[in-house]
Amino acid sequence: MTGTGRIALDPRLSMIARLVGPCERYADIGCDHGRLGAFMLQRGLCERAVLTDISEPSLAKARALMDRLGLTDRVTFAVGNGALALDGPVDAAVIAGMGGATIARIVREGREKLADARLILQPNVAAPQLREALSDCGYAIFDERVAQDGRRNYVILCARPGPSAYDERERIVGPVLLRERPDELAPYASFRLRVAKKALAGAAASGDRSQIEPLEREIAIWEEVLACPRR
Image 1 (cartoon, one colour):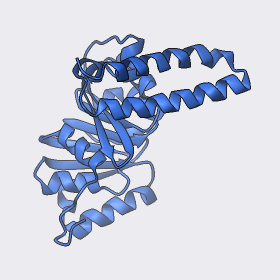
Image 2 (cartoon, rainbow, N blue to C red):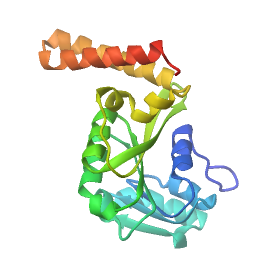
Image 3 (cartoon, rainbow, N blue to C red):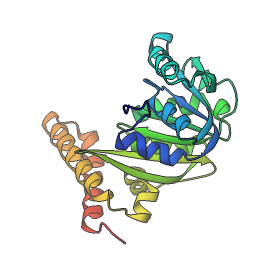
Image 4 (cartoon, rainbow, N blue to C red):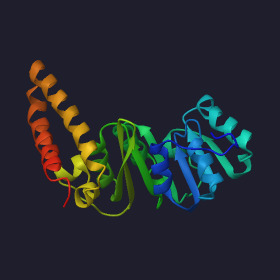
């Protein structure tokens, strides 16, 4: 937070805010400290925010922040499991800072509550599994970005209701990232390549043959991305 009480965000949350864009009612599912919601309200990017978390103690930090900034009258706080806590329709929903499998479960279980909302998703791990789950749940990815924060790279997916199908390369790298090849893709690909090689070494050492072939294919895909970073 700045000295004037204005919220400042790190590069990851700043990118998420830009991808949410202007909307009437936005939801942050698993909102933690509530900084993203406060930023959205202060900048006039949304009229109202719905902040949810799994328990009241988890939501207390967001309540305290909104009260301190004088924003409480524009916020709905809801305790509950994922999107099931939503009390009505929203234009956009953020689910960020969790594993891809957890985000996929939240989307799957809350599909009716999410309705036509745009989803802005930031998985810490398992992005390929999340892309596959989105397709299975009736969502199409329409934008993808990589946010760089120091030495860390975060992939952010934007999806909306619609049919989609992704091949292995698209699930691993991302359909939009593969098509657009932004500058940020190269450092992200280098990071994912290191992770895959380390996992392959572990699988080889343990004799887990079921993981070796998929990891070898993933390594080949990331190497191809790095060999041809731009279209």
